[in-house]
Length: 510
Image (tube, rainbow, N blue to C red; front, top):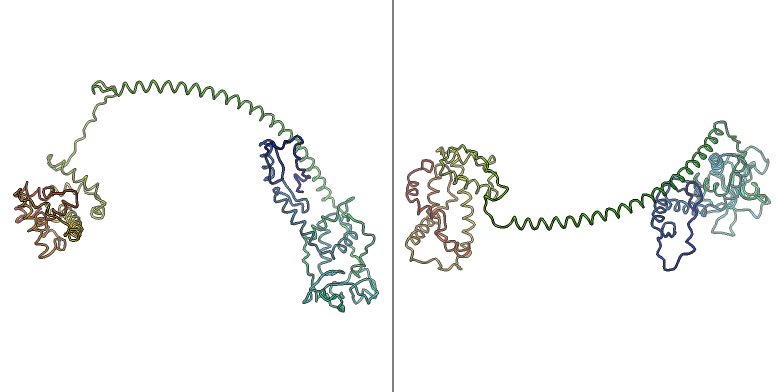
C-alpha cells in the first residue's frame, strides 16, 4: 500500500448505515465510496497530488497510481530475484556491521559481482548450473588452488576460483570444472535490485543494519569456500550525527507544521461553512432583487412600447424633436463644366463597382479620379483619354467575343421575333448595324486591329456603327433586350453629327 506523507495509508471503510438504494460517489483510484461530493473531490485531488511514496523502494513525490505501479514493479522484481543468491547475500549482511544501507549495498555488490555461489545459474556457451558434487566430501561445489589446502583469512582474488558445474538440461551428466573467467552470471544483479532486496529483508537495530530472519542453520561456507569478508566498520561521524539531529529536528518541525496545517484546515472549513451560509443568504437576497428588477423592467418596457407607438404615429416633419441642421456643403474644385459633373461621377461609380471584373488596378494602379478629369478636359493624343478609351474598347471587344461564340452556337434556335418592319427607324438602324458588323467579318475583326492613338478614332466609329447587330440574340437570351436599348444606337439617334465628325476628325479634337 502506498505511503501518504511517509505514513501508512488506510482506506476509508463504507458507512455502516449505508442503504442498498443510496446513491454514492465512487473513487475508482482507491475504490472508496463517499456520500458527499466534497469528500469525493478532496480524495481525487489528494490521489493526484505528488505526496505519495512507494513503500518498497522509498521513492517519493508520486501520485497514488504512480506509487501503486512502483510497488507492483518492485514486488515483481523481488519475486524474480535469483533464489540462489538469497542465502549468500543474507550471510554477508549478517557478517557486516554497517550503519547506512547505501554503504552496505555498495560493499556487498563489489564482493558478489565477480563471485558465484552454490545453486546459481550461469552461462558458458549453453546454460549451466553450479551444484554440489556427489563424489567430493567437501561441502562446497567450487574449487580453488589454495582454498582447500590452506584456509586463509585474507580474501582471495575472484579470478583464482574454479567452479564445478553441470548442465541444466542433463540432470545425470558428469560435472566439470571451469575457470571464473569462462562463466558469467545468467541473471542481472544491479545495485538497484540489490538495494531493493536489502530493504525488504533487513532492518536497522541499535544503529546497525541486521537481517530480519534467523540464519543459525546456514553458514557462509555452505555456499562459498572462502572466508566471509570483513567489511570495514564505518561509525557515524560528527557530521553524520549532526545531520541526523538536523533530520530529527526537521521531522519535528514538519510534524508541528502538519498539526498547524490541520488546525488551519479546520478553521478554513469552518470559515467555508460560514461563507457558504452567507453566500446562500446573499443568493436569496439577489434573487428577490432580480425579481423586483424584472418587474420594474417589465413595467418600463410597457411604458416604452406605449411611447414608441405614440412616436410612430404620422406627423409633420417640423413637429419632430430630433431635427438637425443640414451640414454646410463643401465646394468641389474641378475643371469640368457643371453640366458634366454628374456624368463624370457616374463613370467613376461604374469603374469603382466593376473595375475588378476588367482588372482596372492593372491598368490604373493609382486610380482614375484625376485621370478622368484630365481625359475630359485635355486633348493630348497620348494622354489619359487615349488610355481610357483603350481600356473600355478592350473590355467591350472581350465581352463581344464571348457573346459571338454564344450567337454562333444558338443561331439555329433564334426566331424572327424582331423582324417587325412597322418601325422604319428601327429597321434602318438594324440594317446599318448589320452592314457595319459585316465589314469586320469580311476583312478583319476589330479586336485584331492594332489599337493605338492613330487608329483609335476609326475603330471607335466602326464599333458604334456595328452595335445592335445581335439584337435577336439579346432579345431572346438576355431578357428582352431590344435594339433601342443599346447605348451606341441611342448615341447614333441623338447625336448623328458626332458620328459624321468621327469619320474626318480625331476623337481628341471633338
